[in-house]
Length: 438
Ligand code: HSE
Image 1: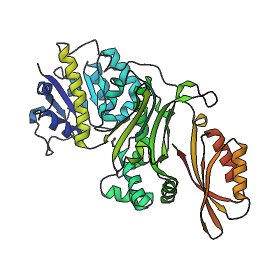
Image 2: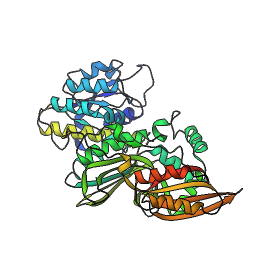
Image 3: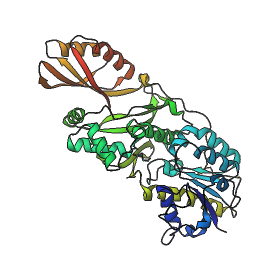
Image 4: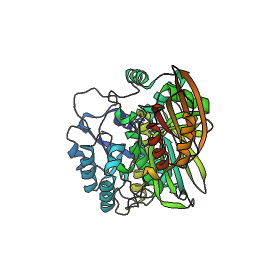
């Protein structure tokens, strides 16, 4: 008996999903047993990029999630509502769910997975992070035997494209964003991407899987790339770094004893990445996720983080996993979910405040070019246990000097306290950039 799919949405990802399912030749043999039986669309009259029987189409999305024929509801409509309500309704109707919706999962994962566990159904989301890159399933399965120390990713293609162009062209953020919007690489409202919110959703999901606990999205510190300038990229380059928007989740350690703590660092921010680091060479719209664990060491997943084909590949892989599970049970419904596919945790992870994080910093200051300014800076940092790795005075014009300081690893609270005092020094004109260094 075929496994029946109800598709909510026939936009870019929905059409890509249908295209794969309607053309199973040369793919996994089980795909011939998967059938699209209902497709929810906004308008019945629009021309379709894929050939879907008109009998399958409906504008009544609720009728799909309540249809007794449907085994798997595939939510590829995006947005928070009605996506969240339809997912919950599908679960309550005993349907398995596949979704590409990182925003819904990052915000409502608790109620969705609690409902799914109660109903004995799967909610799979490979497409929600890293587009076509398989990373969710490896975290749940192949890497599940490791103790994960850190997940560090370039998980937003739009910002990676902008930063790559800023690096290559020596250009500033605003004109390159405008060009990226014209070329269709950035949305008309770019906020979710450039302010780090999309990456925050994604690292919350990855952290939840890597560290086996739920994540409160508000605990993810998130900074975007609007304040990264061509000057910072050029200085970083001279110092041996590239600037990337990193999403970081790591098990925290005590800064004094180095003991591993039962709490996480969760942060998204532009970061100076040493050119020798594996993530430094990930350019353009590509995504990559570096996972570090014991005993495996480092594994990096690289690939297309968006786009119809890659994202649909991830969606269909989830459909196939559920279909395989249902087939192996000899029925198309089950009340005993496979723990490698289901969500097995319920508690919330404890997350360290940013003040407790240990990191290196890059700071660029415009100062009056007069004796003693560098001395004052050094003394103030020293008084707050901030050890300086390098100080470079790179540019001089109109009696103004530009100073770039890179610190050793320091406690963020100490660094910020020192910097607040430094900002108030009479010789300091402005502090245009403060960035963290990997
Ligand atoms: N807007 C995302 C990005 C793609 O730029 O990576 C979808 O997750």
